[in-house]
Image (cartoon, rainbow over all chains, first blue to last red; front, side):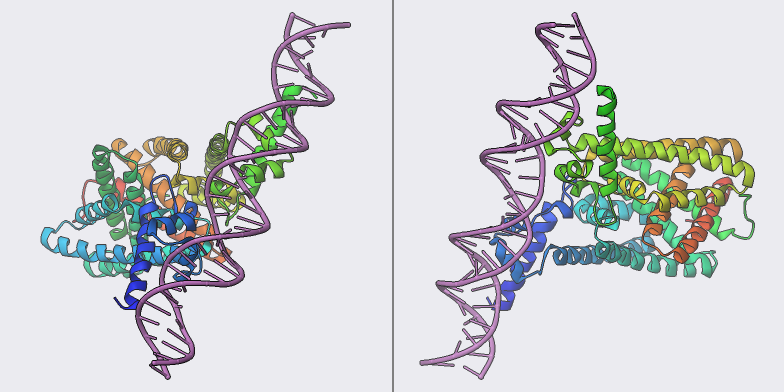
Length: 202
Length: 202
DNA sequence: AAAATTAGCTTACAGTTGTAAGCTAAAAGT
DNA sequence: ACTTTTAGCTTACAACTGTAAGCTAATTTT
């Protein structure tokens, strides 16, 4: 194996080790360089051959998580073409992602309001991508006026993310409730944003 | 000063020290017992005379934060009686709280998705109170059908909390934008939930 | 074939952490 | 007045942290 290949392999081992050590009880900030190195099967100091510090590794993790998020969006679109029910299909797809990749989702969830401004920005950027694509879709496919599409998308993503967070701690039965709740909430938003002309009394 | 009084005073010093050490760059989990004790002006081991461990202190902080949240709600209600605009007044009141007590809000925000299940439950409980009171209000004062009030309240609180989180990292000008955005989002929700009968296509 | 680069190792150190053990002095209880 | 309780202290220790210094062996470059 070439040197570059071997190095890439070790780099992946570090990244995978970090993801593996994330858990409901352990966030990125309570991960130690030595633990990660141990799990990756290298000496502590060898870590520095790949990342300047833990922060650099963390940003890499966020990047990878964002990538998965965008793949998710494509997957949802495919399903929608077959199924038709936009809101329900989107939420169900998202919920499957959350449950199946809880470590990845938890990373985004926590670092979004974490202690590192750089991390917060990185997560915000990934979610922003997500929102922008959804806003595009809303502009094309719904009765929502163009200028409101972005804000509607942001509200929807916020609610869906929050639902995902709730689902993490919930039993499978409760998850169904959460999904139903979120479907309703998104329908209200869609309905409200479409009928923006007549505003309810505030 | 009586013994009990002095003890209570020291206890407060510990709590205040903990709150004071929270910052944009430092969450509760990265607070050390020794640091807190140092700031409170006591020896590290004296901490144990007041709390069994840091977790117990943390739960106390969450409790206090929840208390402030409920006071906030009362304050908002007073303002609404004078002002009339429910949604705008509520959000503006909340935003003032977030900016003026950013450490307190950040605690709730972070521990809501933090690494301790006990903390997450504690925060969820405080927010639940908040939601329940809002749902009550919605049932009495709006066109929203009773059965949907709770879910509408949850959506609203989610959006407002998220707006608060965004505001933490934002410039004062951006905060105005965030406030406007959130007002719109909440109006859509109210409108949508009121006109639930005619559902938009999903 | 010789020289340069480098991924990973071992050893080492200084700093911080939580907390156990036991003392002191002052308040509270009798 | 005497005893008990206890808030806070000092000292101590073992565990863990990040990372600096320098070696080795294998790949890459020349």
